Image (tube, rainbow, N blue to C red; front, side, top):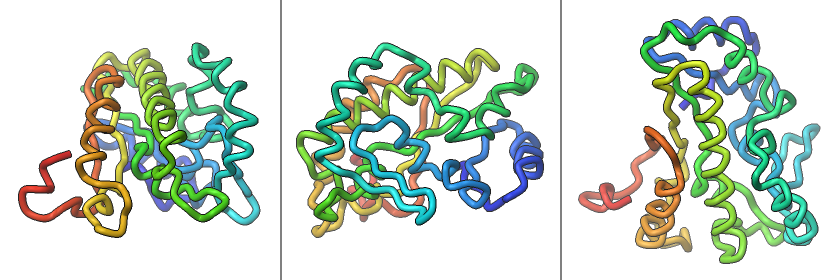
Length: 214
Protein backbone atom coordinates (compact mmCIF):
# COMPACT_ATOMS: atom_id res chain seq x y z
CA UNK A 1 0.00 0.00 0.00
CA UNK A 2 2.88 2.38 0.71
CA UNK A 3 5.91 0.43 -0.52
CA UNK A 4 7.92 2.47 -3.01
CA UNK A 5 11.11 1.56 -4.93
CA UNK A 6 12.94 4.78 -4.11
CA UNK A 7 16.35 4.94 -2.50
CA UNK A 8 16.07 8.72 -2.22
CA UNK A 9 13.91 9.70 0.74
CA UNK A 10 13.34 13.26 -0.51
CA UNK A 11 11.94 12.03 -3.84
CA UNK A 12 9.72 9.46 -2.14
CA UNK A 13 8.33 12.01 0.29
CA UNK A 14 7.73 14.49 -2.51
CA UNK A 15 5.66 11.91 -4.38
CA UNK A 16 3.70 10.79 -1.31
CA UNK A 17 2.92 14.37 -0.30
CA UNK A 18 1.70 15.25 -3.80
CA UNK A 19 -1.40 13.10 -3.38
CA UNK A 20 -4.73 14.34 -2.04
CA UNK A 21 -4.27 12.04 0.96
CA UNK A 22 -0.55 11.78 1.77
CA UNK A 23 1.05 8.78 3.43
CA UNK A 24 4.46 7.92 4.83
CA UNK A 25 6.43 5.76 2.35
CA UNK A 26 7.99 2.39 3.11
CA UNK A 27 11.34 2.15 1.32
CA UNK A 28 12.91 -1.33 1.58
CA UNK A 29 15.52 -0.44 -1.07
CA UNK A 30 16.67 2.45 1.11
CA UNK A 31 17.01 0.25 4.21
CA UNK A 32 15.86 -3.23 5.19
CA UNK A 33 14.47 -1.66 8.37
CA UNK A 34 11.99 0.15 6.10
CA UNK A 35 10.56 -3.18 4.87
CA UNK A 36 6.91 -3.52 5.91
CA UNK A 37 7.41 -6.93 7.53
CA UNK A 38 10.50 -5.80 9.43
CA UNK A 39 8.69 -2.72 10.72
CA UNK A 40 5.77 -4.84 11.92
CA UNK A 41 8.21 -7.19 13.66
CA UNK A 42 9.78 -4.57 15.92
CA UNK A 43 9.56 -5.80 19.54
CA UNK A 44 7.62 -8.92 18.52
CA UNK A 45 9.00 -11.70 20.75
CA UNK A 46 10.92 -14.47 19.03
CA UNK A 47 12.03 -12.49 15.98
CA UNK A 48 15.41 -13.23 14.40
CA UNK A 49 16.37 -10.28 12.20
CA UNK A 50 19.52 -10.55 10.07
CA UNK A 51 20.22 -7.19 8.47
CA UNK A 52 23.18 -8.46 6.44
CA UNK A 53 21.28 -11.35 4.86
CA UNK A 54 18.01 -9.41 4.86
CA UNK A 55 16.08 -12.24 6.49
CA UNK A 56 13.33 -12.29 9.08
CA UNK A 57 12.70 -15.53 10.98
CA UNK A 58 11.15 -16.72 14.24
CA UNK A 59 12.33 -18.85 17.14
CA UNK A 60 9.85 -20.36 19.61
CA UNK A 61 12.55 -20.58 22.28
CA UNK A 62 13.27 -16.88 21.83
CA UNK A 63 9.52 -16.13 21.86
CA UNK A 64 9.17 -17.82 25.24
CA UNK A 65 12.21 -16.07 26.70
CA UNK A 66 11.13 -12.60 25.48
CA UNK A 67 7.38 -12.83 26.04
CA UNK A 68 7.39 -11.62 29.65
CA UNK A 69 9.55 -8.60 28.73
CA UNK A 70 7.16 -7.60 25.94
CA UNK A 71 4.14 -7.96 28.22
CA UNK A 72 5.78 -5.68 30.77
CA UNK A 73 5.65 -2.92 28.13
CA UNK A 74 2.09 -3.61 27.01
CA UNK A 75 0.83 -0.28 28.36
CA UNK A 76 3.73 1.75 26.93
CA UNK A 77 2.59 3.50 23.70
CA UNK A 78 6.11 4.29 22.51
CA UNK A 79 7.05 0.61 22.69
CA UNK A 80 4.47 -0.24 20.04
CA UNK A 81 5.13 2.72 17.78
CA UNK A 82 7.72 2.48 14.98
CA UNK A 83 11.08 3.62 16.29
CA UNK A 84 13.46 5.94 14.47
CA UNK A 85 15.71 2.96 13.74
CA UNK A 86 12.93 1.07 12.01
CA UNK A 87 11.69 4.03 9.99
CA UNK A 88 13.36 7.41 9.70
CA UNK A 89 10.81 8.13 6.94
CA UNK A 90 7.85 7.70 9.32
CA UNK A 91 9.37 10.08 11.86
CA UNK A 92 10.16 12.60 9.15
CA UNK A 93 6.50 12.46 8.09
CA UNK A 94 5.38 13.05 11.69
CA UNK A 95 7.69 16.07 11.86
CA UNK A 96 5.80 17.86 9.09
CA UNK A 97 2.79 20.15 9.22
CA UNK A 98 0.09 17.87 7.81
CA UNK A 99 -2.93 19.79 9.03
CA UNK A 100 -3.72 21.34 5.65
CA UNK A 101 -4.55 18.04 3.94
CA UNK A 102 -8.10 16.63 3.90
CA UNK A 103 -6.71 13.47 5.56
CA UNK A 104 -3.50 11.49 5.98
CA UNK A 105 -2.95 7.75 5.97
CA UNK A 106 -0.79 5.32 7.87
CA UNK A 107 -0.31 1.59 7.47
CA UNK A 108 0.82 -1.56 9.25
CA UNK A 109 1.39 -5.05 7.88
CA UNK A 110 -1.63 -7.18 8.76
CA UNK A 111 -1.45 -10.20 11.06
CA UNK A 112 -2.52 -12.77 8.44
CA UNK A 113 0.21 -11.75 6.00
CA UNK A 114 2.76 -11.36 8.80
CA UNK A 115 1.88 -14.79 10.13
CA UNK A 116 2.13 -16.42 6.71
CA UNK A 117 5.46 -14.76 5.92
CA UNK A 118 7.34 -15.31 9.18
CA UNK A 119 8.56 -18.90 9.52
CA UNK A 120 9.60 -20.65 12.71
CA UNK A 121 12.58 -22.96 13.30
CA UNK A 122 10.71 -25.74 11.49
CA UNK A 123 10.00 -23.45 8.49
CA UNK A 124 6.33 -23.38 9.45
CA UNK A 125 4.36 -20.11 9.29
CA UNK A 126 3.69 -18.79 12.77
CA UNK A 127 0.08 -18.16 11.73
CA UNK A 128 -0.50 -21.89 12.23
CA UNK A 129 0.68 -21.84 15.86
CA UNK A 130 -2.34 -21.68 18.17
CA UNK A 131 -0.21 -20.20 20.95
CA UNK A 132 1.43 -17.46 18.90
CA UNK A 133 -1.49 -16.47 16.64
CA UNK A 134 -3.86 -14.89 19.27
CA UNK A 135 -1.02 -12.79 20.69
CA UNK A 136 0.06 -11.77 17.19
CA UNK A 137 -3.40 -10.38 16.36
CA UNK A 138 -3.51 -8.42 19.62
CA UNK A 139 0.05 -7.17 19.12
CA UNK A 140 -0.69 -5.86 15.60
CA UNK A 141 -3.93 -4.19 16.72
CA UNK A 142 -1.95 -2.39 19.40
CA UNK A 143 0.57 -1.17 16.83
CA UNK A 144 -2.20 0.13 14.57
CA UNK A 145 -3.93 2.03 17.37
CA UNK A 146 -0.71 3.66 18.55
CA UNK A 147 0.23 4.80 15.05
CA UNK A 148 -3.26 6.15 14.44
CA UNK A 149 -3.05 8.16 17.65
CA UNK A 150 0.24 9.70 16.51
CA UNK A 151 -1.13 10.52 13.05
CA UNK A 152 -4.28 12.10 14.48
CA UNK A 153 -2.08 14.55 16.34
CA UNK A 154 -0.97 15.78 12.90
CA UNK A 155 -4.36 15.59 11.16
CA UNK A 156 -7.70 14.86 12.83
CA UNK A 157 -8.90 12.91 9.75
CA UNK A 158 -6.02 10.43 9.84
CA UNK A 159 -6.89 6.79 9.20
CA UNK A 160 -5.12 3.46 8.90
CA UNK A 161 -4.82 0.79 6.24
CA UNK A 162 -3.91 -2.80 7.08
CA UNK A 163 -1.81 -4.41 4.34
CA UNK A 164 -2.86 -8.02 3.79
CA UNK A 165 -1.25 -9.43 0.60
CA UNK A 166 -1.27 -12.86 2.24
CA UNK A 167 -5.07 -12.95 2.28
CA UNK A 168 -5.02 -14.35 -1.25
CA UNK A 169 -3.69 -17.65 0.15
CA UNK A 170 -6.37 -18.37 2.74
CA UNK A 171 -8.69 -20.05 0.24
CA UNK A 172 -6.00 -22.47 -0.88
CA UNK A 173 -6.49 -26.05 0.29
CA UNK A 174 -2.78 -26.07 1.10
CA UNK A 175 -2.79 -23.01 3.34
CA UNK A 176 -3.74 -24.77 6.58
CA UNK A 177 -5.71 -21.68 7.60
CA UNK A 178 -9.34 -21.68 6.50
CA UNK A 179 -11.40 -18.72 5.34
CA UNK A 180 -13.81 -19.40 8.21
CA UNK A 181 -10.99 -19.17 10.75
CA UNK A 182 -9.63 -16.05 9.04
CA UNK A 183 -13.03 -14.37 9.24
CA UNK A 184 -13.36 -15.21 12.92
CA UNK A 185 -9.87 -13.93 13.71
CA UNK A 186 -10.23 -10.77 11.62
CA UNK A 187 -13.63 -9.92 13.08
CA UNK A 188 -12.06 -9.96 16.52
CA UNK A 189 -8.97 -8.13 15.24
CA UNK A 190 -10.99 -5.26 13.73
CA UNK A 191 -13.03 -4.98 16.92
CA UNK A 192 -9.78 -4.06 18.70
CA UNK A 193 -8.89 -1.30 16.21
CA UNK A 194 -10.01 2.27 16.76
CA UNK A 195 -11.25 4.78 14.20
CA UNK A 196 -11.58 4.49 10.44
CA UNK A 197 -9.60 1.69 8.84
CA UNK A 198 -9.34 -0.23 5.61
CA UNK A 199 -7.76 -3.44 4.41
CA UNK A 200 -5.57 -3.63 1.32
CA UNK A 201 -5.49 -6.85 -0.71
CA UNK A 202 -2.77 -7.23 -3.33
CA UNK A 203 -4.24 -10.35 -4.91
CA UNK A 204 -7.57 -12.08 -5.42
CA UNK A 205 -8.47 -13.51 -2.00
CA UNK A 206 -11.08 -15.93 -3.27
CA UNK A 207 -13.41 -17.10 -6.00
CA UNK A 208 -16.95 -15.98 -6.58
CA UNK A 209 -18.95 -15.07 -3.50
CA UNK A 210 -16.19 -16.35 -1.19
CA UNK A 211 -14.14 -13.21 -1.86
CA UNK A 212 -16.65 -11.24 0.23
CA UNK A 213 -16.58 -13.39 3.34
CA UNK A 214 -13.63 -11.84 5.14
